[in-house]
Length: 317
Image (tube, rainbow, N blue to C red):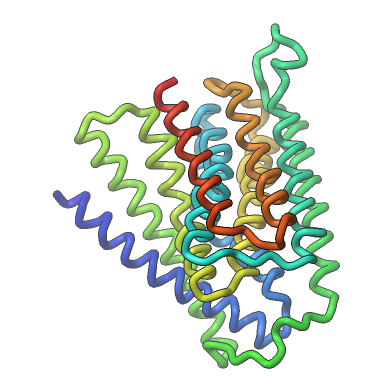
C-alpha cells in the first residue's frame, strides 16, 4: 500500500533531519557562544512544534475542543512520559543544576496553571469545562514570563560551549541547514500523520484512536527523534531543553494563542484523570531530575509505564 511506503519514507527523512538539527543547534551555540539550553528552549523546541500549531489553530477556529485539547494534553504526556522515557533507556539523561533550579520549576508552574484553568467543572459542577479567551491570555502572560527568563539567560556568559568543536563552522551553512532540517521535520511529520490516518481509516480504526494515538504521537515525532538523537550524542541540554521548551510552547502558544484570538472553547471528553496525568508530566520530571541530577533508566521505565497505563485506560474508557 502507498500509505506504508510514504510512512517509511517519512520516518527516514525525519530521523536524518533530526540528526542534522542537533548538529546545527549545537554548532550555532558554540559558534555564537550561546548557551545550548537557550537554543534548545527556543529555536529547536519551537521549530518542532509546527505540526501542533497548525492542528491547534484549525481545531480552535472550527470549535473542535476535543481535538484542540487532545493535541496539547496528549503532546505533553507523549513528550514527557514516552519521549523522555525512551531517551533515558537509550542513555540516562544528566540534568544540570541550573535546569533543576530554574527551567523545570518554570515548566511546573506553567503546567500547574494550565491544569487549574482546566478545572472549571470541579469548582462548579453545573458549569461545563470551558477555556475562555481570558484563560488564553493568562497562558500567553505565563509564556512572556518564560521569555523574560530566556532573555536574562542569553545575557549571561556561557561556559559549556568553550573548548568544543562545532560540527559545522560556516554560520550561513548552519542557518541554512537549521531552517532546512526544521522544514523537513515538519513536512515529513505531516506526511506520516496524513498517511497514518488514511491507513487507520482503511483498517476501520475508530476516530478517537486516530486522534489520540496517530495524530498526537505523529505530531510528536519531531520531538521524539530530536530528543533521542540528542541523548545518544550526549547532548543532554538539548534533550531536556527541547522537551521543556516544547511543553511550555504547546501549553501557552499552541493552545493559548488561538483561544485568545478565536474565543471560548468547551472541553469535551476530558476528566480529572487527564488533568492529573498532565500535572504529573512536569512534577515527576522535576522529582526524577532533582533526585540525582539524572533521569535514570529505571525512571525512564516508570515514565513509559505511566504512558502505557494512561493510553490503555483512555482507549478502554
